[in-house]
Length: 421
Image (tube, rainbow, N blue to C red; front, side):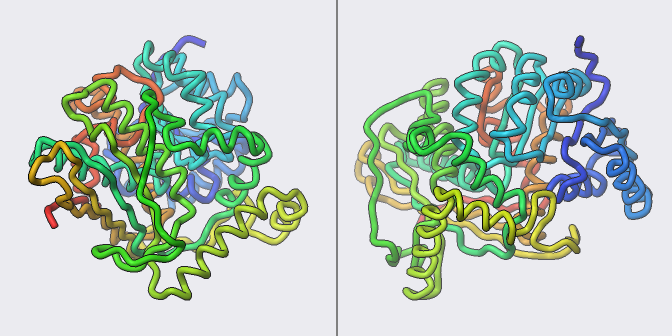
């Protein structure tokens, strides 16, 4: 199907829990001249959402509705009809590959909110080169997974490079505050990933540099299950550590390969934890994550869990209020590497603060602001810059969108900083 690009943006999955949050964000914050559409499998559900938009956002630009399924024809229709596709339809390892393929081939930008790093590895292997040739920016994990980790790591490594003309040895990253539960789609993702990829492929994708274009020996600081960091406080390993590390180390590798003058450091490593208030809370968190990690490998556990947990399409709070205030806080400490001379071992603190909602509100913000940023560059409203433009396209990471994207985040209330300790 020839690409007409008549629409600016299509939001696929707008009738689901996370997709509807993204749709509300567009209604509140998108420019009035945005030509957009909501897409999903049910016209009745789409029509109902359109009524909700008319009622709750009378001044918003009304979207079109597009009925689209999970088949290849629908994927091509979506990719050929707009400049940017935002999709919240997961698990992506089951439902997302055809849309990535269609966008890569059509030169249509693509944003999602997955945390399925084995699937992202598969998309890199299959479609990175195609997207690079067509100029499509394919940006997975551009939300709660794994944008905060990626952006804070970029800020710290850039600060160290600019101030000390040195690399970063390692970054210790910590989720300091989390204020929501998991949606049904999030839980289904855990189950589907193991079912689609199996243990062998999951183990391969979990290697620190699996998504990086550059391979090298990798080492990172190791700690007890609960330990006290001198700056970040009492920490324990966190469930997002592996998907976040995958994206951070891809950013490291892409930077190292394409802009070595901005290298994050030849020995760079990333570890992630969650702050806890006590040894007991830390041990309880560590044990719970361990039991869940083992449990999802067992078919009976997955069968039972699917019966009792929130179902896909629904969230932890069905009365979700996009205007509800909340607080999310990440902090990280980066260490100057040995090429820093007398500054070797100096430490830099990075912070990421969002006080306007919970993790799902942040996800809606991220995917929409990334899409609007790409639209602005396409329309010449924003200067094209960033690692993504150096590469020309491909399966990229949030930091590849460049400083213009970070400026957008600052304008909507996300505060990201790096400073000397």
